Length: 239
Image (cartoon, rainbow, N blue to C red; front, top):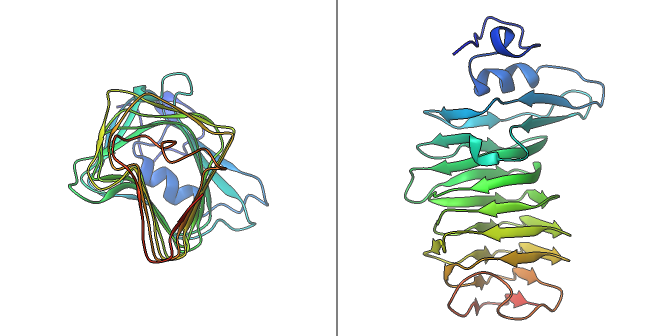
């Protein structure tokens, strides 16, 4: 690889950093005065031994954007044994990436502690789970795809929120979701507005309990991918 963590990371090729985790560490120390900090990833396979952690907000209320290949996100393939990203603070944007892990249960993408994440042009490959949201918000701001199975595509708890507005979600290869495609519990919510799904999946479509909410805008019980009926329990609502 051309990158070196002794570089300044301000140019591609020989001037780049060697690892994404180092680039994020550097970015989190920048006071961008309310502007965003962008980290570009070249095409390739990025296998890490631990999660890339976002554990404090940027000074100046800025955000970090990690951008790969917007046309073919599968060309920027990020994997880890457990979480690929662990976002517990600040505002982060991910786009043009493929995310997966080899875990039997842990998510490729964990968002917690009131962090804010926006996703676009992401490909979710096989993982223990795809997205785990705990007392935080994930906003799908652009189309994305699902090419691999998991226990759940989205698992919300502790007031977590998932929002999808005007997004097309393409499901390929009929992936299996062994728990449910979408799980909302303990006062969490998922809202889909003008969202469309293409392709098929297997498994339970949804499970909502503990005063959780799934709001499809009246799209019906078969709106979410899967081939088994969803369930509502303990004050859960599917709308």
